[in-house]
Length: 425
Image 1 (cartoon, helix red, strand yellow):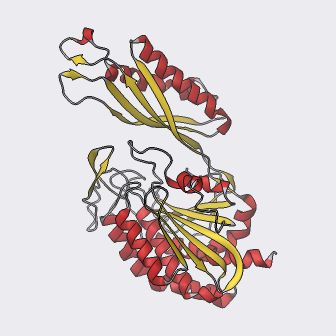
Image 2 (image 1 turned 90 degrees about the vertical axis):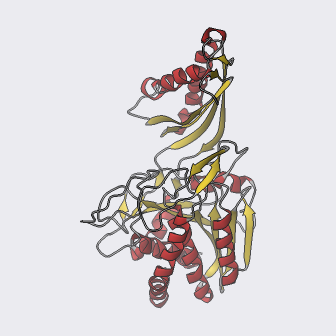
Image 3 (image 1 turned 45 degrees about the horizontal axis):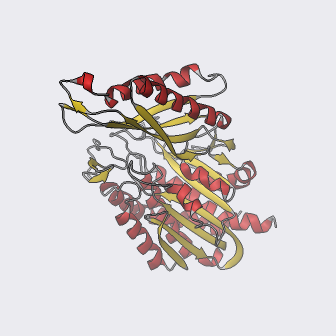
């Protein structure tokens, strides 16, 4: 890996910039933006990279707000890419933090509260700090470093058309020139275990599950609520579909070999209490650990929706608008770069090897180059009277001390990869 003096400098840089990084994170937390709408965040990021003197800064990527910064090191070598996601969620924050969000946004045509309830504010701030450290050590870097700030990791708004997030960046060819030789990505992990701030978890091979996103549109016949026999109620059809879909994981797969979940997060229709609407809409996700069963499970969902709707005199359409593959941590890359994680880990929290991890759409980048994805714990301290909810909950909190480890890990990976690759030819 890097020589000892350089490794020591990287660690010192991380400690020196830590307080400023936390200020950035808190600013992003107080001003969250929904997927493909991260205009303020992306502007701050791009301006930061330009002020630092990155060789190239690309804006407006991924169909919306994506930003890529490319830094040429002082020595020849490979191109390594690091990814941070920027988007928040339509959740009303209840943490009571002094920098809690009170922001709202437009999501599917409706005004909704917005919160960084998954930690992407932390990811963005960490990568901004990484950028500053890399510029300070530019002469020591072997090769190019590509910093990817991605929109819409949580998926697009209900009215968004086409791909978004990591899949859109890949489809648009933004990694064609230069083409990364490896991708690295981390995600904070708040699993409600106290005392885990800074704990790194990493796996080799396939991650937990794949996810196929679906939109269901139910067509009925609207009319007066006092005369339901003159209508075909799409809301009633939707309620029956919602219930019936839950039997797919329970009755269609071997639970010993394939863990399947099916969740509906949107169910809407109608504008007036006494008017039965013409249509209703649902949106959700089908998750499964055996990718080979994806087509069969999709067929079962479609059959259930069609059958129930037609039996009631209506019609249902299912649109599989995005398919997110499992996270595939390249075993050889993960083993080679493990010392970089070990060096970043706190002395009392060695790196933990796990069987798998949760899903992140960074999995799409495996189609471009080998990927290593890992998590960094942000659990609250032992004895902390506060509590944190899990990801996507309104009480989600981040123990910011864990971000020191994340910063050191991502900086190590950005620099070490060039040394490791050139050393091995």
